[in-house]
Length: 216
Ligand code: PGA
Image (cartoon, rainbow, N blue to C red; front, side, top):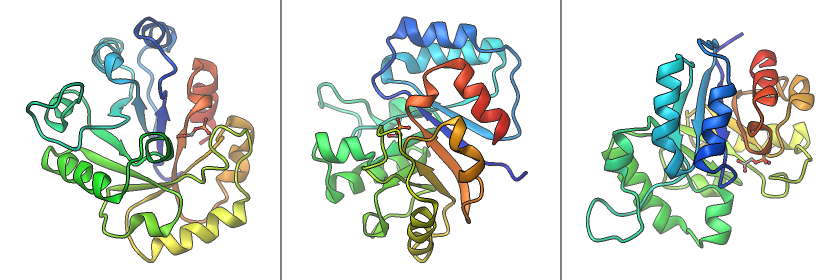
């Protein structure tokens, strides 16, 4: 099986102690042929990194977002420079950021610039090919908003159709996200051009993550 990328997006679901419990429960010395990127909230990035290193868990760390600005007088923001000391990946333009925090293309382009300037690997989340115009991310996660958190994975034919359009605009590997769970994996794996998955709800329990990884 080719190496896939599995992005685990905890969103705002875990407090630092819950993040710690998850990683304490996770098997030590865990290795996978796939690239697994754990995205805790900002407050849990550092402790997650420490535990992963200490227990030799084969995860990389990603951030769920970053500031559109560099370092400076931007109260409440977390700069790409700060993140670059702790994480390898960053998500940009998740559907929840676009919808709830009104992140438009201009803002997302600034975030992309900050990520690149700080050598972070970028996962741009899109709902369709038009969200990709003007961007050159390292990975593209196609995430139809109607599937996120709904419990229903998008029809495989629709995912393939979207991938075809996206592929005309980028050579970046393509991920699918939206209610990915273990039970749907056998079908999802058949999707043409699928290089990985972005998992939200099903990333919150250790057993669910282990099941997904083992059948990727
Ligand atoms: P979900 O979330 O797996 O809970 O649908 C995916 C995402 O929003 O990244």
